[in-house]
Amino acid sequence: MRYVIEELSKKGHETVVLVPEVHLLLKESKFYKRKFYLFPYPQDELEKCFQTFSHNLFAERSFLSTAWAEYWNVWFLTDMFFLNCDSLLKDHETISYLEESLFDTFFTDPALPCGMILVKHLSIPPVYFFQGFPCALEHTISRTPNPMSSIPRCYTAFSQHMTFYQKVINFLVNDLETLLFKDLYTKYLEIAADFLKREVNLPTLYGQGSI
Image (cartoon, rainbow, N blue to C red):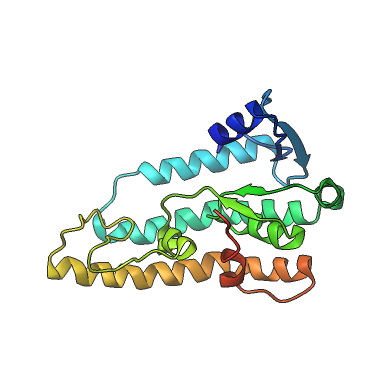
């Protein structure tokens, strides 16, 4: 996303990056200005959270335990992202700023739906920056084919040339990904309904993408 923002800046466009008050990567830049919003974690807690996540991510384990371990590792991180989103949506000063600024488009990573909730509220076209996530979400967003017989699911380490046995495992992993998606994402619907003042569903939020 940074490379696109730099090129847009060179062409005279202005970009505002939403940044939590406590963060790790989003430093100052001549290519964009930052708009800070409230965040419920202190700096040391944020750093500890990512250290735990990365340690769990690269820990050695058996194939059979991988899915279970990844489930809890992803849950651990997305729980923090959920609190981050809830904090952003309740930051009235930041939301008012976004409403009044009349932006032309909204860049977001749809791996987490907070950006899509804001897009729905602001009624501006979003551009998705996205590649690779459990639940085959990139195929759902782009409406591209995703046959289980030839596209291996995350964490299986299969190639596109799978044996019958591997295809069966791939099918089962796909079902697990669907359950994972529901566990991780359904909780956003409550804060989305509270913020938007109406009930929404995940397909509606994810179906907004322009590019």
